[in-house]
Structure formats: C-alpha cells, structure tokens
Image (tube, rainbow, N blue to C red; front, side, top):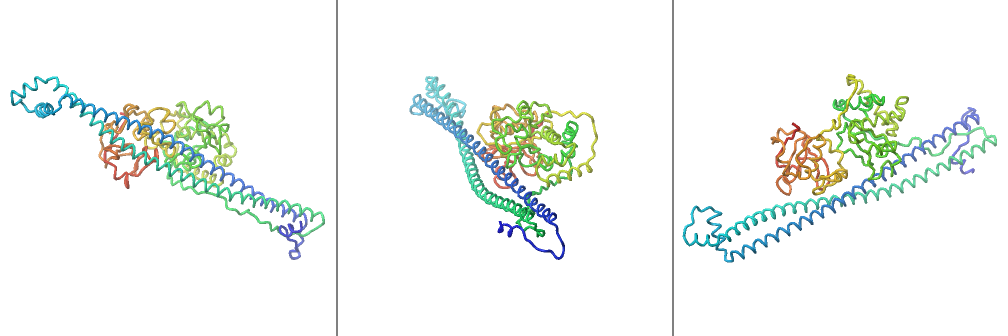
Length: 549
C-alpha cells in the first residue's frame, strides 16, 4: 500500500498555502476521473479497430468465395468450349472422309472447283461434260460437303479464338484471386499483430485501472488518518491521447441540382433540413461520384449505411454486416427488422445504392435519433466522431448560405430517375466478378456476376434502354447499336470498344476524363483508364452512341 502511495500520490507543503483535505480529495478525484475517461475512450477505439479488422476480413473472404465460384463456372465454360471444338474437329474429319469416298482421286473435286466454283463460263470438252453429267449426284454431294467444310472450318477458327481469349482471361482472374489470397493472408498477419498490440495495451490499461483503484483506496485510508496535504497525483495519464480523426476533403463547389429533389423530399418527409442531407451525401461519397460505393468495412450505397442499420439490427452477423442471403432491399424484411431503409421512389424495393432511397433513409435515421431536439447528437449517431459532426454542420451551413432553393410543394420521385449510366454501375465495383456468359439472368445479377457485354446491357436497362436481347447480347451485337461517333466527339455514356483477344473483344461505358467503366476478367466491374497502358493500346477507336429515342 505504501508503495502504491509513493507511485500515485506525493505529499508536501506548497509554500504556505493551506489546502484542505476536502479540496485535495476533489483534485485527486477529478484527475482520476480524467484517467478513467481516457481509458474508456481507448477501449472504445480498440473495439472499433477490432470490428473494422473483422469486417475487412469477412468482406475479403466473401470476395474470395465469389472468385472461387466464378473460376469454377469459367472453367466449366472452357471445358464445354473445348468439347465443342472437339465436336467440330470430328465433324471436319467426317466431311473429309465422305469427300474421299465420293472422289478418291480428287479428279471430280478439281473439276467442280475449276468449272463451278471459280466460274469458268463453259465446260471445255465433251469428255468433261459427259463425266460431270454422269456424276451429277456426286457433284451435288461434293458441293454440299464443301459448303459444310467451309462453315465448320470458319466455326472452328472462330471458336479457337474465343477459347484462347477465355484461357487468357481466366489466367488473369486466377492471378487476381491469388492477389486476393495474398491480401487476405496479409490482413490476417496484420490482424494478429494488431490483436497482440491491443492485448498489450489492454493489459496496460488494466494495470492503470488497478493503480487508480488502489490509489483511491490509499487516499481514503490517508484521509481517515487525518492527512491534510496532498500533492497532484503522479498516476500516468492518457488524457491527452490522440484520437484518430480522419480529415475528408470533399472538394465540392456546390450542390448538384439533380439531387436537390431528394434532399427536399427528405426534409418534407422527416423534418431534416435539405442542406444537412446534402452535406452528408457530399462527405460520404462526394455526391455519389466515389469510385466505389462499398467501403473497406462494408458500408454501402450513396449515403454509406452499414447493412444491418439499413435492414435492421436483428439481422446483424458481425460488426454491422449481415449474412449474404439477407435481401436488404426487401421491404418486408426491413419492416420486420425495424431497419431504416426507405423506398422513396416507389419502385418496390429500398435500395441503398439509389440516391433517392439512400437520402430518404438518412433523413429517417437522423429523425429517429432526435435530430429535431439535438441535431449534433443525431449526426454523431450517424458517425461516432466529433470531427464528423463538425464537418457536417459546417458544410451544411455553407450549402444553406450558398444555394437558393424554391419550395415547389409536393415532390414526386420517379423510379430510377436519378440513375446515370456512367455511375449506376458503381455499386458493383469491388463487389462483382467476371463470368463468361454471366449477367443474363436475375440470379447472376443479384450476385454481381457479369461479362463485359451483359454489364453494359444491365447498366442501360436501369435507364429503361434495351440493347437488344439480354440472353444473346455480346460485343458483336452491341457494336452495331446506336450511331457511330468520332473519338474526338465522344461523351460520357457512349460505348467504347477494345481489340483484346479479338477485334471488338471488349466493351465498356465511357465516363469522361479518358476513363470507362466495364466488367473486366481480372477485377470484375471497375473503372479503367484508357489514356495509358493496356487499355490505351487496346482501344480500337470504335465509339457508339445509344439513346432512348
């Protein structure tokens, strides 16, 4: 006990100033409370870090499962393609054999080739004429077989090119999977190291707690013995510990007019002023222009909701995530889970990637957390950080002062009205895989399985523009859609084509600034730069503009 007192409390006379035991006890109590508050702050921070690491690992594992499924499916497709090539080769052998049986020495075939195929106008000798007339049935058979041979040869060559392309693409996909495995192993190693550091920090905190408890007990014992003078405690303090406060530079100059109706709708329905909703939208995803709408820890959509907050905490599996089989857009599921997701545009689902639904859900969440009585506390619930609260409040004030808004009464929201073909696919970035022939049914789409042409088809379908038949869409069908545009005149939304394993082997959607969004074999849906490197080399300058007119 005396040792603890020596460590924690110093006794002395400060000049001639008399400090009462009661005053000194209060000083010690305040200091110890400061320590306890700091310790609790560190414990809370550790819990958040642990959850973040767990979520990142879960998300990486889910991506790895997607890659495994995609690779299995793609291997199966390649196997079927190889079998088809073998079938065509077998057919070629059969045709050649039949032609040999009909014309063993090739004489008839040569005559047919010279006189009928090349188009020599007349048969030069009576012998040839009689010979061909006598063998007219064989000639007919030969012509038929030659046509079959030509078609089969062309099909074989085309399929060989397709197969070679598939093999190359699956090699890229395998490489991406290996990178993901490597990343996961590194995360696991970092997680173990982090866990060890947290354990050591936890022991340190526990030791500090024990010191504090014993110091309090010691102080009480001294007070009982009548000690009157106590110096300031020397207990190590973490009161000035640095709290992680990331700085986000939104770099915005104003509120995009196309989103104003959604902010005003949120204000009318939930009583949260539009400029606060705009501020959150700006900070979270730079007005839905971030390269991905899924954070490393699993926050999703334009307003960055954790899935369990959107659909309901009863479905939470870990750190705000939910099981993969939970449909977070289903209105009945959200209702049962008391989630905050909202179907603002009345399209039958609450989609966190929809700006309309996301903004309304944010307004719903803020309102439910007491925005009307304490706006700072409500914003703090949105993101448990004081820096975030200040950033939202300051940016909201700026938007309020810099933007003129007229109230037009009711605000009807049209289903899918906020979609832009250049940004609608952002929801799949980091959340999709490339599958040969994928994206042509709802099961594939729900799971984010696309190839390049099916992704383009899907993106345009969100704007109710149909690019042919979904089941048969390909780069070959898309390259004839719309109007050909000169490269210098291309605009966001135009289709751009690339010569990869074949001419026009890849297609994407131009988004401006020399970039396009598309489904690539190595990384699924992603934004790529076509002004440098591989995609610059492969861009064949074919640009097609598709409109809904």
